[in-house]
Each structure stands twice: as structure tokens, then as C-alpha cells.
Image (cartoon, rainbow, N blue to C red; front, side, top):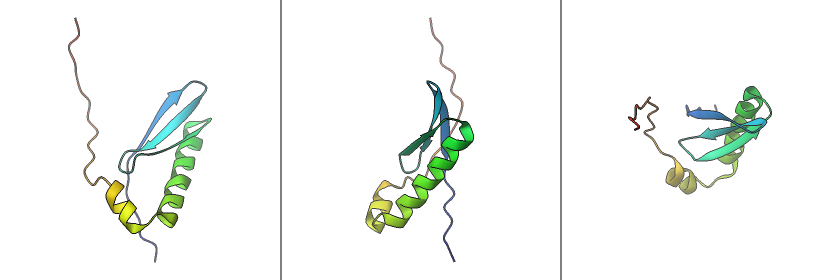
Amino acid sequence: MKQVHRLTGFIEREGDGYVSLCLELDLASQGETIEEARQNLVEALELFFETADPSEIQQRLRTEIYVTPIEVAVG
């Protein structure tokens, strides 16, 4: 049975495409659409987990990630 990791994906527009980032492992990918960027990130993560040494996974994996809106007064 495969282990499932629940991770956070962040996608933003960059130029004519999109960049996707996994915050917990600091891995990135890209695509021409949001869905393509998301799927490419999933594939990059699967490849990482298949090939990385367990010590590298442990070293890179951040277990507490918080996404929150922030207000900043300017001027």
C-alpha cells in the first residue's frame, strides 16, 4: 500500500504560464495552465519521493506550514 503525503501547493501566474511550488519540500514546477502546473508539480513530487534518500526527505520536509492573509499598512 502506498503512503499518501498531504502537502500544500502554491500556484501563481508568471509571464504567459504558471509556476507551482510545494511549500513543505521547496520543490517547484510549471505549466501553461493552472491544472498543468498542478499536475507537473504532483509528478515532480512523486519522482522526488521515489528517488530521494529517506534522510533527504526528512531534512527537507517542513511539517508545519501555515497559509494566512496578512494586512500591511503602507504610506
